[in-house]
Length: 311
Ligand SMILES: Nc1nc2c(ncn2[C@@H]2O[C@H](COP(=O)(O)OP(=O)(O)OP(=O)(O)O)[C@@H](O)[C@H]2O)c(=O)[nH]1
Ligand SMILES: [Mg+2]
Image (cartoon, rainbow, N blue to C red; front, side):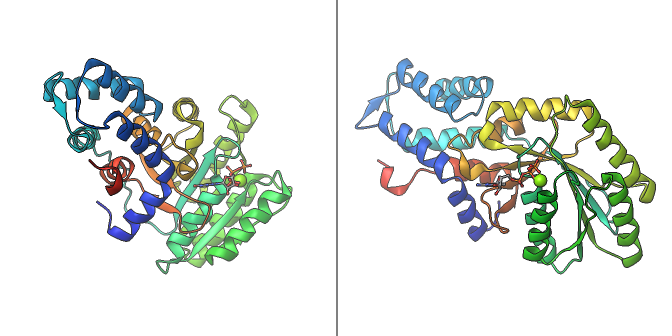
């Protein structure tokens, strides 16, 4: 579990999802209602429409059936508490890749256009500079001048340094940046890349080249390859993560824009269905809007019913 102020921020970030969920559940339970087949189906529909995934939703409803006698009056709170603990029980802890801390710790951020790579790098940079670490951002998206400018703004916001070179080959920029990070004893290097689809052959080859250049300078790196997934794309995000990771190695997922969706159940679906752990989540556009994904806290924040809605 994370501590309370972070938990409150998480709750705030997931408020769209929670409101949607709470409103719909509380409507089902006006007055004393028996737990009928029809009610169970409606709960299942709510879980599915929160993007928790069909398979998991069906399993949860089966558990409800086993634990509550059919057609007997139930309280909303006891059902919600059951849903929460059932989901938490199912959310196995996924170990994120641990490599003994090395200097520099190199994080390569990849993903489809607009999924939040540059913003997430800015947040990670702030997270590390805030801990007193020296951070170097690498503008590996040399394709657009605006991309470099955007990273420049994040370097100012986070207090991180920046290596850039317009219209250069991304691998060349990465090579220079890593050499310099090595010489200067930088703690963390964050490499930004241009957006790409897993089907774009040339761009995937370019990514491969970046990976090889990184290894050439620091054989154990990248220590993390992070794929950003836009939570507002729902189940498509899950498919995207699967396809992308089939083409290039991915260690962790960064699930972005969870504040922008009412279907926050997607984090649970991704965690449940993929072997790649969700390590980070984005819950806003500001530099502080990043958290480590903790399944138990996430479920708690998503499903918590407001006091005023309790019966
Ligand atoms: N609400 C919200 N917006 C976010 C979050 N993360 C990123 N964004 C927004 O998403 C948009 C795209 O983010 P970028 O960081 O530019 O995405 P990108 O993957 O670098 O995009 P390309 O470089 O064009 O591929 C921006 O408007 C960000 O502010 C988040 O966690 N919450
Ligand atoms: Mg970008």
